[in-house]
Structures are given as structure tokens and as C-alpha cells.
Picture 1 (cartoon, helix red, strand yellow):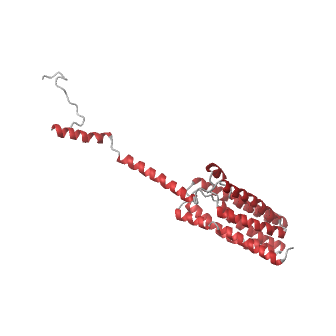
Picture 2: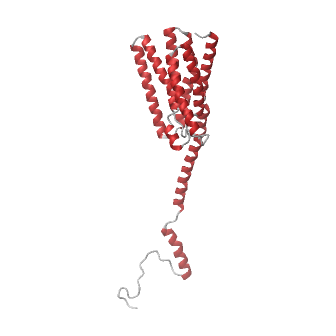
Length: 285
């Protein structure tokens, strides 16, 4: 076992990295409220923060009750903020989301997390305590990788547009830092359920970082670009409606010409009555 002082430093860094990553979406969510639009953003990172915070906190408390090892409480201390902040992020996203497909994806993410939670609860109350703890550790490991996978949900868009602006850079940077620290912590605690997700997540985030390096960000904020597009579309629709409303009809264009001709000749205007020519009906001249 490493010295207690080294373990304390590693635990402190783990807590700090988690809280930093869980609070990093605050500027983006504030921009959601400011622009009243979520633009090209995806809800997967916010669902991951919320469910990951709840899952790791539950696993930490469960492991402490079963093993009586106080070291696992670091999982609780470092994830309570994410469990609370994740709900706020999802509320902000859902309130300002204008895209139907983004809402459908959010619903799909919620169904997946609800299914994982229901299966975990069923296993916990139906099997032996140690087996239940093992299964909860497995679910926690899956949740640990969900955060890294959530950064890859916009990869098709990145490859099609050759621009990585849809990748959440604050979450990517804090995630790589945090998973590096957690990998060290898992190795020191000999906990495979911490080592495995940290290593896999670090690999996935490294891939996302390579994509960002290959496809530079053309815009600092894709939300503003999406907002501008929406405003341009609304303006174009209004201009088209206004031009149709002000365009005179053929009858309206003909009536001023008739009035001008009648004013010149001194005759009454003809509005479609049949004028008979002399001799047309057999009459006399």
C-alpha cells in the first residue's frame, strides 16, 4: 500500500478533477439560456454527468457499507456535485432545445439510464450482497465510460462538416485530466472497477482530442452559428410573405391604366360591359 500522505494527495486530486469536470458545462448552459437555443449541442454529456454522479455515489456508499473501507467514500465526495448539477444542466437543455431530433435523443438517453437503474435495483434486492456489489461496480464502470462516449455522439457531424466545433472542449480537457488521476487512484486501491473505465475513457478521449487536432474548430461557439441560421430563415420567410402581400394583382394593375385612358378621352371607363358595334345585331345605322 502507498503511504497515507500520497493516497490523500491522490484522493484530493480525484475530487478536484471530478468537480472541475462536473462544473465545466456551466458557461455553455448559461449560453443556452441567453440565446434561448441549444444549437448543435447534444444532451449526452449532461445525462452522463447526472447519472454518473448518482451511480458512483450509490456505489461508494454501498461499498462502504459492505467492506467498511473508508477509502471508497472518495467516490461519494467527488460525485455528489455532479448528481445535483446534472439535473440543472438537463433542465436548461430541455427548456431551450428547439430541435426535435435532439429532444428524441435526450429521451433515448433517459430510457437507457432508467433501464440500467431498474436492472441494478432488481439485482441488488434479489442476489447476495457481495454479488450485488460486484454488479453495481460493473454498472458504475459502464457509467464511467459513458462520459467519454458522450463526446463521440457528434462524430458523424464532425466528419461531414470537417469541423470539430460540436465537441465539448471543456469536458474533453477536464475528462482527460480526471481519468488520468482516477487511473492512478484505481491502481493504488487495486480496484478493477476504477481502473477499467478510467483506461477505456482515456483512450476514447484521446481519440476525440486527435479528431479536434485534425479538424480545427471553425467557430468558437456553434450555438451562435445555429442562432444566426434560425434568424436568417425567419427573416427570409418574412420577406417572402411581405413581397407577396405587396405585389399588385393583374386587375389592380389594369384599373389605373383604364382610368388614365378615360381621363384623356373624356369617356366613362369600361369595366367589362359588352359594347355593340353598329350593324352587329341587324340594326340600322
